Amino acid sequence: MPLLKYLQRFSRIISTLLSVYYAYMLEYRAELMFWVLSGSFPLILMGLWQEAARSGQFDLNPDDVVRYFLAVFVVRQLTVVWVIWDFEREVLEGKLSPLLLQPLDPGWRHFSSHLAERLARLPFIAALIGLFLWLYPVARQQPAHVGWGLLAISLAFCLRFLMQYTYAMLAFWVERATAIEQFSFLLYTFFSGMVAPLTLFPEAIRLIVLWTPFPYLIYVPASLIVGLPVNIGKSLTITLAWCLIFWGLNRWLWRQGLKRYSGMGA
Image 1: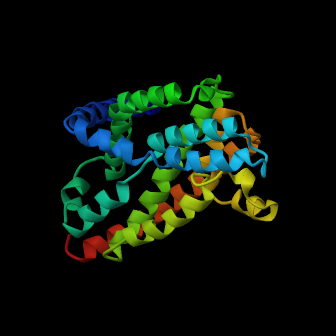
Image 2 (image 1 turned 30 degrees about the vertical axis):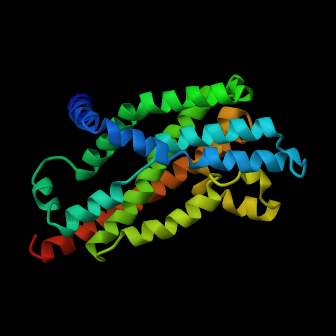
């Protein structure tokens, strides 16, 4: 019974936060449209790789390239995270202090705001997908593993959030934790499958990269959607393992960081 009451209370808190942040995000619908458009980089890369695929120098055909980068666009739109910038500002400006007085970890506020923003940007994503399918009819093929793809996207969002929120904990020690995120973004750009499918990587490099968290942020969910070969069980297991690793590291840094934050007079 105590567990049931806790879950009911937790669900009420999350639903309230979602409704509040959703209303807040709707006030910035024009900005949301520009945020969605700013994530259209994969659609530009699609044109480049489609031309390369016509040369027949790698396994993917031009139609596979179109479907893959459309899936990459969708995955990126649903997994974008900015928590490190918000948290860094809260620490540096002292805005974290009043949040610590409330009986709720500030991380849940950030998590809820991200989820609410996903809901608010869905109409813009749907409109761009509709335009894309009209321009590229070859992309209208039935998705291969919708269920597994949605699960992989959900896990990718959780992993991306945990990674960046963990980097954000370093704001307790340094003034610009975002610099760490910028370095991580370089690895994310090249090893997540955003620039090119990992099937185009040399075998040795691909085997190493697949043990890092980056391919499970874009490549695996996108591949599941379009039907590229992916070991579903192994991929989901590795994603969950990285989520647990970053969760544990995050909680440890949070406890250590609070001691330093309190010691600074907060």
